[in-house]
Length: 266
Image 1 (cartoon, rainbow, N blue to C red):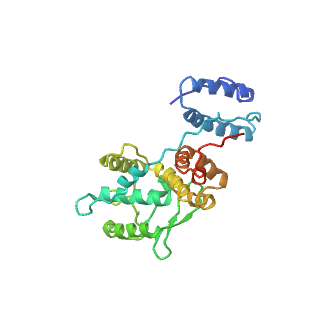
Image 2 (tube, rainbow, N blue to C red):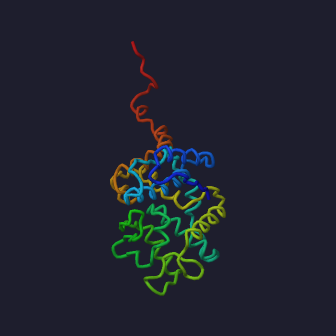
Image 3 (cartoon, one colour):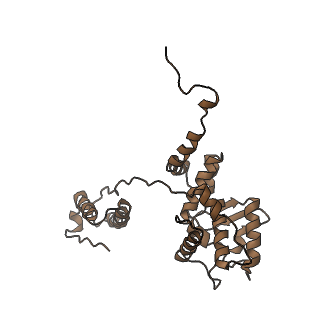
C-alpha cells in the first residue's frame, strides 16, 4: 500500500498539495486506473472535511484515463465454450460452468449479480430472470429466451435445490459462490477447452457486441445492461468499434450497387 504523509495543516491544504500527491503516485504507479483509485479515496475524504468546515472548499479531480478497448470472445471461442459437456461423464463443476457461460452470454449480467441469484429468481412462468443485485442498486427483469430456459430447466434438476431461496449457483457445499471462486471456475473451464482468454465480464462485452451485430437497438440494450442513461451505453459501444469495423469492411454496401471500386472524376 502506498502511503503519502500530509505535512501541512488542513486549513493550508491547496490544489497544489493535491497535485503533489498525483505526482507522487505517478512515481510509483504506471497504471492510471490504479492512480485514480487512490485519488477517489482521497477526494472523498477531503470533500467530507470540506463540508464539515475543517478545510477550505476547492475543486479536486481525478486524472483523465483513456478507456481501454473492451475485449470480447471470438465466434470460434464461443462455439467451443458453449459446447455442452457430456452430463454423464463431466463433473458438476464443469456442467455448472457451462450453464454460467450460457447465462452470461444470454443476459450480459455482471459477476456480482450472477453470484447473488437465487433459484426463485428464475421465473419460468413469465420467462424472465429477476436480477435483484445490480451496480445501480435497481433490480432488473431480463427476458429469457427458449434456449436459456431449457438450459436452466435441466440445470435445476441436477442442482437438487431444497428451497427456492437456495443460491442458483453454488460451491460443492451448496453455499453461495464467492467472486474468487466463480472467477476460478470459469478460468479453469476455459483452459480445459483450450481457450486462453478468460473473464466473466468479457461475456458482458461479448453480449453487447453480439446484440449490436445482430441488429439489436441501443435503447433495449441499455435497459438490458442496466445502464442509467443512453450515453453510458453509447460509450460502451464505442469501445467495441474496432470489432464492429471488421464486420463493416466485410459488408461492402457500395460494392453491391456498383461494379467499380472507385469513381473517375472528369
